[in-house]
Image (cartoon, rainbow, N blue to C red; front, side, top):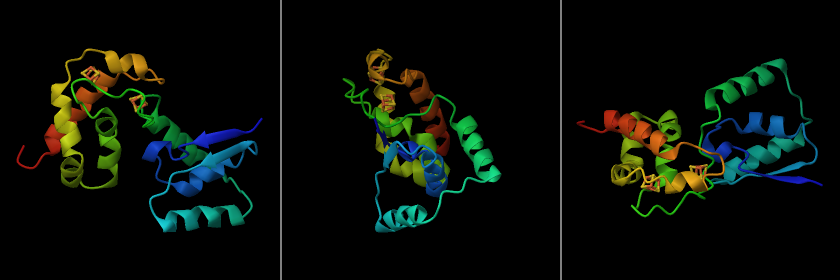
Length: 156
Ligand code: SF4
Ligand code: SF4
């Protein structure tokens, strides 16, 4: 039986498409179904598939580095935890550190600002915890991300 691999870029947490596909192509029964937001990304993946898959020792090292960096506590953006009765935009707020890694802190704070502000409404009720298939400590992580956001806000 084949496997459809959703979110081969870990919901945006992984920014090296070539490396992601090098990893996935080692498993012939796995068919990745990535989401794209630009034509160039489609071209990039098609170009990867034109070549034989060659995984070099430095690729394996990079894969291990990503694995260690991400650990087990990153959000896959599946959205099963939502909705939150307090209106907390959980998924967007959970991804704040990933956005910060892609742009300046000020830009990230402006872009994800509404989601981060919604975290202030969290009552720590724990309802979202029961719905996360990855057992992420959502309220704890949200508070951590909020503290990071507060350090990044302009004028904060
Ligand atoms: S713990 Fe916070 S984010 Fe989770 S459902 Fe309750 S209020 Fe919403
Ligand atoms: S259920 Fe868990 S992994 Fe899925 S979006 Fe919510 S926090 Fe992220």
